[in-house]
Image 1 (tube, rainbow, N blue to C red):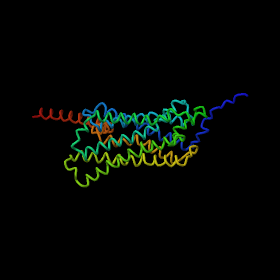
Image 2 (tube, helix red, strand yellow):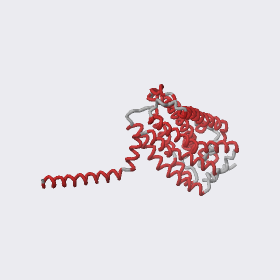
Image 3 (tube, one colour):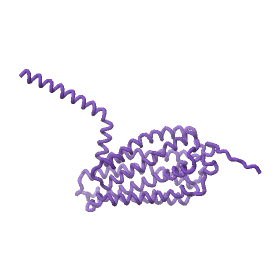
Image 4 (tube, helix red, strand yellow):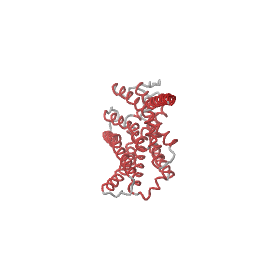
Length: 330
């Protein structure tokens, strides 16, 4: 019989509400601009201008790099929302979907590494030489990258593809939260290993740290180290609670409910908040690095600085001319 050619029907099987698409475009534009500035500055500061590297600077470089990779994918997502169909083909859809999963997974493990690092600094100060051991922290980060990239393989290689029906003009795999409904088992494994385990590590580290601080067992520590560590810990706790916990709760709920064809407002909102994490890392960079603070402050105050320099030079010139007049008069 005659072959029926299926025309791709842009937007037909996505059903994103118009308001959501407009909101997503605005939101992702802001995150893209802010995120690029914040994380490229951080990467530059930690990789090129930091003279003494230690474990924390290594972790910060990784956080900034992960954020940047995720942020650089946002324009493709924005085109998807603007056009209401996916114009970039199957392979790129798979890569984007894989990196969408990759971001929360690796971010939480990096936070867990930073937490164990602060645990060492506060609770085990006698081992604090280890914190200056850059090669160990590089190995830890490499391990996490390999492990997390491996976990995204099901999305990259799955033969059971929900987008095949639309000739790959949809990219349902990057649908908020429900990446692949078909891989329920994989999703739950990911949830345990890339959300519960790192979160549990963080909780243990922080409980011990808080316990030691309350009972004054950290008296040998320099007050500055203690203060900085506490700030890092509070920042990480807030970021995990605000950005990652709602996302994963919603993820579980939608997996159990199994409604992949419906648009979920909670799925959308929690994904937005999770993406916000890429910009909130500025607080972490700011606390950790004096150089980052100086860079940020110098950028913000650059104009004021120029003005003050002009004023100073003007003032010193006028003072000079005054003193010349005075000395001439004497």
